[in-house]
Image 1 (cartoon, protein in one colour):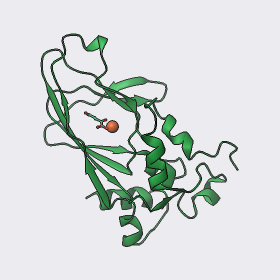
Image 2 (cartoon, rainbow, N blue to C red):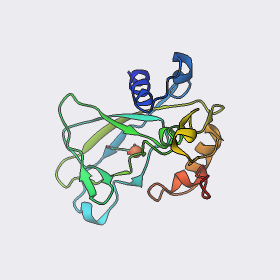
Image 3 (cartoon, rainbow, N blue to C red):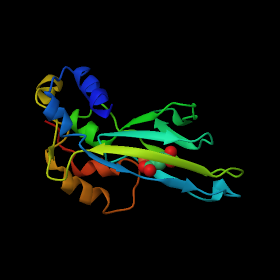
Length: 180
Ligand SMILES: O=C(O)CCC(=O)C(=O)O
Ligand SMILES: [Fe+2]
């Protein structure tokens, strides 16, 4: 499923990659298992602080409690309500880099609940640590600029986990500040 989603998203950018080229960006899989106990004062605590995911794509299964918020440019935070049987698909930093900044990684956070405990299980589909990530062929030419440099995914990962998250600051590691 992740492979098909990524192929479709890339086709939307006019990028056609063969099967194995797509596979290399989603072949490493990992999960988080998040448990948010009942919190009497959610306003005084942090469920999960604001961040974007490291992965190419995240497929998130949440229960019926809710509390996941995504930042929408100029519109603040909107809650992603749980829909029975539905999965939330998030763009991660890696896809933002691969797409030369066209697909924006989703900045999100989680607020705890004062009456119900919550469980969520995101599945992260990423490259292996030796895989190089950078804007896919053809995109910088089409966009007239190169927004991200090529980095080894393992190095991006080390930087990503090297500091407390502050929103999407993690992407600065690969961003070309003097865009050309
Ligand atoms: O619990 C959620 O809905 C999201 C958790 C999350 O953002 C993460 O594990 O990266
Ligand atoms: Fe996340």
